[in-house]
Structure formats: structure tokens, C-alpha cells
Image 1 (cartoon, rainbow, N blue to C red):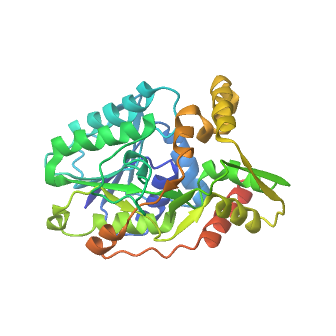
Image 2 (cartoon, one colour):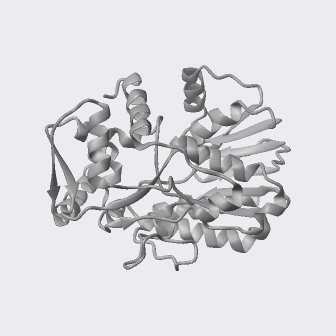
Length: 331
């Protein structure tokens, strides 16, 4: 079976590629990337070489697939996570995705990794956001993912499966570096005075879920989703910080910071390119996702439909994340 995987140099796609590499069911694995040299460097660093890999270049938002490419399955994990303007998100996450599917055979099935942000935070009075609650994204990023889902649904019908992971944690995620750097200090800050509650998922569990859906019979895709994926347990922002500190053996205190101060800081960070690169999750658009107090989702429909269960433990997941960052010389 021929597979096309996008986003293979990113956090989720990179972990997924390493998992797929160990599976002989794939005859060829097409890997469109903006920077093939980065992909080859990452694979070399992992000690991975596979003659089934077929890298090809993405220029801007245009996909140059190999001649004769006819993948039976696409796992679309690429996308813009952090931007400054609405147009940036929509150009990549919507227009770029539509350009990709325009080049694919009409029989290709597509798993799209969207985001919990496409649905928005858990509505007031609800314990968890379910797949039946109307979507209400609060960021440009979330709105672009929701628009992408709707456009694909109109074009692909039964060939589409939409997955919405919650907060993903695990090794090879450079975005957790600011968390560990903050956890290493004597004083840490959390946004707002109320506890914030989140669903989360270990990267290995997410990869298991994606492949569980990828390898079932096509008839099992009669439900397109969007399916939420989470560990089944919720965490608070304070618990996340405290656990990160514990795995790197750091002690300190966590203090709440007024949300208005977080919003002001995001405007300053947006204005300085070096700061935007250092802490992209604190850009003004993504800060809109920090303000709500509850991002909890219901992953039971996915678990029941695809016979999947999460096994991740927050402390073990963060420990493996910290170990990877240490091996990279980043903490």
C-alpha cells in the first residue's frame, strides 16, 4: 500500500514516520516537505534509513508530488501552528491543503489531523466538548482548521476522516521547551487566578490512534468525525507546570499572572521577531486559546469506533520529552 505523509519534519509527523518505518505494510512512503535536507538530517540523527521513503519538495503552498504518485492513503499532518495574521493560517491550512488534494486520485482516502482548536473551548456548563456540540473556535488558527475541515468534507465525502487531537505531549516537540525553561526557575507563572483544565494526549497514543484508523477497512469510515482524541484524563495548568518541574528535579513556586498581563505580553512578543520565534505559543492569536478555563474533550466515540485506548501517563510523557530536549542540548 502506498502512503503519503505530510508534516514529516514536524512534531506529530516525525513521530508518526518513525512508527510507520517499522511497519512493512507500506510499499512506498511519499514525504512532501519544504526542506528535504532537514528531513534527511533528522532521519540520520534517528539512525533511520528506508528505501521506501520518497521525499519531494513543497514550494510555498504548492505540492510537487513524484510522477505517477497514486497513494491509497494520505495522512495530512502538516499545517501552520503559529502565525501573526489570519491570512497566514488560511493560506497554509486551507488553500495549501486544497492544492494537495487536487493532485490526488479520486480513490485516495485521507486522514486529516485537525485540532481541538477547531471546535473551541468547552462551553460553559458542559463537562467536555463532544463531536455534536456546535463549533466555536476562538483563534484564527482554530478557524482555519475548521474551514479546512468543511472544505474537505464538501469535496471528499466518505474518503475523509477528521481527527481533532487535544494537547499533544511527548519527545521531539520543541514547543515544550518554554515550559521546561519556566519550570526550571524558582518562580513560575500561570495565566489567570482560576485553575485551567485541559485534555491531553501522549504522542505515542496519538500515533496508535491514527494508525488504528488508517488500517481498518474503508467501510469503517462511514463516520467522518470530527473525532476528538485525548487521554481520558484531564490536567490543570498548575499540574502541568509542577510535573514538568518534578521530572527535571526543579523546585520553586507557581504564581498566577493576571490574564490582561498575558495579553499585553503577547502584543510585545508579536512585535519582536526573535521573541516570536522563541515563544510562538504566546503570540496574540494563540493567547486567545490560553484565556478560556476549560479545554476538555470527549474521546470516547473514537475509542469505541476504532477500538483504541490511551495508555499515556503525564509524568512519564513529560520525562521522555525532557530527556529528548536534554539529548538535543536544549535544557
